[in-house]
Image 1: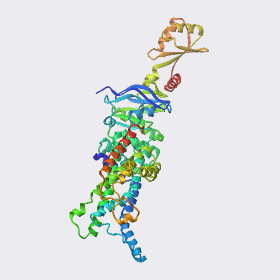
Image 2 (image 1 turned 90 degrees about the vertical axis):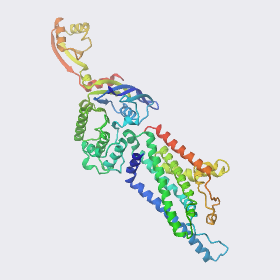
Image 3 (image 1 turned 120 degrees about the horizontal axis):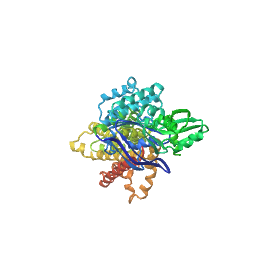
Image 4 (image 1 turned 135 degrees about the horizontal axis):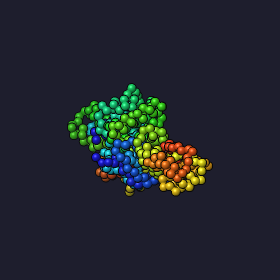
Length: 299
Length: 270
């Protein structure tokens, strides 16, 4: 089995002068839950739409499951994009029958996915009578039909009430433990943090970060130090190799350290240099601050 | 192919507007078939009452084999615009509900999206043709007194031409709908093109390319039957055969309409 579920090479989409997606390249590994994070208009939906052949790329290429981008591949990928698109006058069951016909899935699967997304009781109601949350859940149900290896969910909790949001997140976690690869686009950091193992941050169509959700959180640790003699502290820190990235704020110094460096290493180093520390605290930056910083940096 | 048929059937079978419009079309068509007879009889009655012996009585034997096929297909020709509206709705619905996007996501190819609608074109044309066949056989058997197998079948080629004409016209409507996306606008363009735009060059250049313009060429598959009825209605062109060049030209146009529809969908973000 190939290691990468998806390989993207230099994917771009231009709308006139606007570069909605700009030379995007990445690889996604099997069995992970990827979050694609970015503010509104950062190119998340356009990227996903290109990956499922709905929007035509201006340039670049991609390959699913090591096997190109044809329709047979798409049948192994369950996806929902932006707002749900179904026939208003058809019931949930009839809408899913169309999906089942396209994917070559038995009609008996329909009730299963409808109960998975909590729509079984309303399965014979017309789509137009559904609330936004129910429409959204039907779209997720359609994506699940045929038990695809890969799931693409674009803002899946949009329009759901808090209970519905919790349900969908639980569903995603269950699917993830089933060894499915899930790609979830969201502008909500909190959502990505709760559901995903890895993430990709987009800004104005450019990838500005890819890595594990935990990794980003722990990549940078800030240690705050105070000492009686701040000038000496500053001088000593400047000479060191591990602690030379710092900011001084009056009588407090914030040092940026790698996660693998122990904070006692700092106190040992300072002690060896005869500095008496009056305050030493580890301040882990939150994911949110990190992302915020990332988005700012690329301005 | 079977699965594509099933998909279209699920969509269409519960689409009330579709059935409503199709029934209106069928009723209008059948009423026209029936009404022609009484219209002619009525006119004859007036001629008799007026005492103007110079005027010839109109033939009322329009349902006789084999001429019934030519007569009915010529009348039905004028109703194809209603069927085209049904076709336009079927295509523009997909844009309105954004369901072509859903179908693509689910796993259809862009070519299959076109195939679905070509199926609609062929099936709608077939439905209309079958109605005409049934009506023709029933009235033919009822009104003709002395006929053989050959009389029944002799002008059945008009029914074939009628089917071809419908496929051509509905394919044209389908292509417009794929291009334009909006139902009202598409219908408007179809009407203006059919009844105004194409007629001008069609008549102005009737000696050269005029008669090979798309709709003109299709219509020339079934020209007015050579009977006094149509002469009286001031329809001068009359024929008793189906011109081969127009069959070929119509087939070419059908190919063009399908290809253009595919190119539109292949190159468009959905």
